[in-house]
Every structure is written in structure tokens, then in C-alpha cells.
Length: 263
Ligand code: F6R
Image (cartoon, rainbow, N blue to C red; front, side):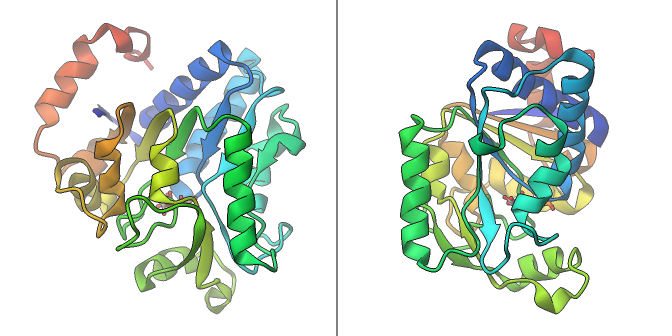
């Protein structure tokens, strides 16, 4: 794992956008795994900017989102399909038929999970999966005690996740208590992970995920098992990390990051 600490949220988001853009340019039919949430809004803004100003081409890109609320139709303003259309898909030249999320209105929940895993399998797996980390320690909606080998399934959300996310609903009591989520095992099979974490409220959980023990109590700690994982954060989110000096040295010196330091 590599941890990159940028001075601001804006710079962290730019770096994540540039990493995605580089992979998309070198493989135009990239299979991109996407996340939602407040952290990603800035990043999607930068991807839209790269499309407009530098012709970043999404026409062949396929996308798979990590999760979707159960019981919300795609047109609901709080569904993750709506979020993706609003923040990214409507503003770039992606073919909507190549954008996939679990169907929150599926009648047979188990069959929907099997279908979603099958779709990922049929495209040959995800090349780059974008992840955020929730204060409950989750990646996707893999709440505490999610098996580290879990697959796409329905998950009951924790009170903390409900508290955090329900503020985005006009009527917080309307927030679903269940969601579909890719499993931790599904996520670990992606070829590359890019984790974007910003804000002081994430400092403790980021330290647990990156430097703490690997445990299903903090499913984000499973990223330590992945052979190609880049964590991008900013000073506030990084404030509880112990090895900051080492992480900084790598970013400042490793040739891999030469093109990214001046962003
Ligand atoms: C959402 C997702 C979640 C979020 C996490 C952080 O698709 O996968 O794991 O990334 O809850 O959300 P924010 O950025 O809103 O703090």
C-alpha cells in the first residue's frame, strides 16, 4: 500500500482524478469501480473538468458502483444511480448502457446480487476501484463484522451510517436501512484500489484502516491485503497516521509519482 498526503482536499481530489485519467487514457475500455458520498463529489467535478478541458474520453469506459440503497428507484434523488448521473455520467461522454449499479428495486435480492457479480465477471473484473471510507470503518457498505471474503449482498446499515447519510435526505426517516454492496472479497479482487479520504472526521478511522490490525470490525483495514492499493488523503485526514514522514518521502522521491507532484 502507498499513502499519499496532499496539503488540501482540492489537491487530493485532483491527484485521484489524474490517477484515474492516466489509467483511462492507457486503457480506453477501462472497467472503473465507482463510489458515492460527499468525498467523491469534488473528485467527479475534476473528472468532468478533465473531460471538458483535456478531452478525457469515457466513450468506451464501463463502470460498476459499489452499492445502492434497497427500496429506492433510480429516479429518487437519494439513490446512488441519481447521484452518479448528477455528478458524473450526465456531464461526460459515457454510454449509459455501460454504467452499472445494483437495482435497488429488485424483487429477488439474492438473484440481484448474483446478477451483479456475474456482470463484473463477464467484463473480466474491475481494473480500478475507487473507494471512500465511512466513519463506521466501512468500504462500500461493508459494515463491521462483514466477512473479509464476502461477495455482493444486502447489508443492514449501522446506526452511525444511518446518522451520517440520513442528513442528505429531505426526510431523514426515509433513508433505507438496507443496501446492496459489493463484498470485501469482491473489492479485493479488483486489479487496483484507489482510496480517497478527506476531512478531520476521518482521521481516526483512516489510521485504523491503514496502520491498525486487519479486522472485520473495520472492513477498510482489508485494503492492507491488496497488492496494488493507493490511499490519497490530505493533512486533516492524515493527522492520526504514525508513519507520515515515510509516506511523504515515498511520494517526494519515487519516480512513479514524478508527474503528479505539481498538481
Ligand atoms: C458509497 C460508499 C461509502 C462511502 C463512505 C464515505 O458508495 O461506498 O463507503 O465512500 O461512506 O462517505 P462520505 O464521503 O460521504 O464520507
